[in-house]
Length: 396
Image (cartoon, rainbow, N blue to C red; front, side, top):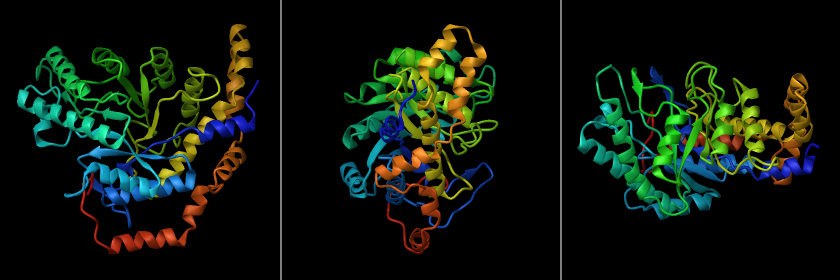
């Protein structure tokens, strides 16, 4: 039996999608930064833009911060910044330590052979754990650029020992209810080894750290052809799936808008998230976007990303799971596959529009945004006024 439209709408309205602060500022590629008129220039404008996306979609109650890109200005504490976000109608979300930009991290951060560099990295992890406790965040998300470029450059097992030891210092600083999400990436920037290259490595690190450590899956961080749905199902079964950084890719970590290159994969991921829960809603993990938006209008790109996530989720909710189980048990290969295809090919746009209207949001948020003259004028006004003091960001 499939879910009713009312049940699907209720599930959609209960799925929070966290926005990344770094997706609202100017960004670029290795070749340059491409400025956009009115792009967010400081943490306040990032929060304001995230709040606008939430007002349009009703699905984005939190914004993830990257430290030190999103530090509050001198004289303002974290509690005050959290209050500013609440005034805008959202909350501060996951805290992301930056362990890859400092000059000292050229040979790694938590895995660096120099104990002084590792102490600096550990202190930053502790700082971010403390910030999470102050602002009421539920996650500290750790991604590392640690790796090596040449055989013999460093001792691989020694680096693993340093990784566990240094992350443990940050983990120990977590307050109750806050999780450390350990993110992995197959490559970059190390050309020979990467210290957290895959979900299995991340999983074993989480086992070492403790129950508040879980794996974060970035959908762009895998080798070509990797079955991400299998990873999701396995981590759910082991109760170690912490959440996602949603994006899309064609070749490597392109950070394209989620669902733009391979929407069927996103649908299948949500299918496993529902299967691994109660069959009627996605597992209660963190759903976050991680996209740089280097050539797209920032706010429009974020709204479209949210719509794509909701579309994939709605289709996955429509899978007739009882019929699917029967076909699977009978060994009916194509019959089972057809049930998934039928759900995926359903036009869910009317259902999504009705769900948004029930929340008092526009049926087509992207269309409203693109036709909003006041929004366009606010971008020009922002460009003409000084930015408020605060942390910078990639490309600032």
